[in-house]
Length: 267
Image (tube, rainbow, N blue to C red; front, side, top):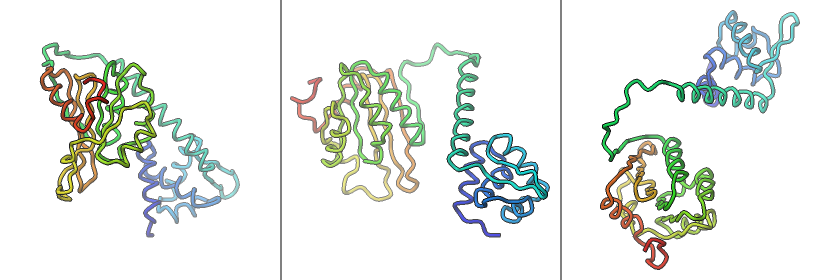
């Protein structure tokens, strides 16, 4: 039986949330029916009938399915909003348990001889945005941020930027006037400017060339630079801290290109 793509997507996501394949298939199958028997569910999900009962018992225990003890038994999925809320609660509980477990893991070998200057690589827009938000929240003096693409101005980033203390300098650069206006409206306390780094995503850039996504400098000691791979639209980044003053001065001057000296709080 051919399965619609959105059905397969739902099954895959449910598996990522912790359900086994047959459990995910049975839940999605019931979501497509008002009520169903094991026989009917087996027909539309291609789950063996004997395994349907096992899957239903697990789903019922998780609060995702209701059972009518008639002959034959009838099954139905709980309302969508209720199911998604239940899954969200279960997922968040797992994340909290994971955090608590990792937070208490004993350090086996802590190397105190690590170099002061460190550079690390990371990938994935969510992970990079989380790291950028963490760095912004840790700032105590100055934040210089350059955003080259509107897609990177997420609601979460705007919320983080608006939460910056008033005594911390916040400077945000863009490559276009429309994006600058959007940022100024979204983060009114920031000093915004059009960056002089047009070469980051210049008109002569080939379609298959990697483009810089975001540049972040916090307290003149921590740098995050991300790039976006055109073929996959995946964001990658390098992150470093503990750099010498000379490199930081150069980095800041580059990032602040286009900011009128009179508007630069540090000039």
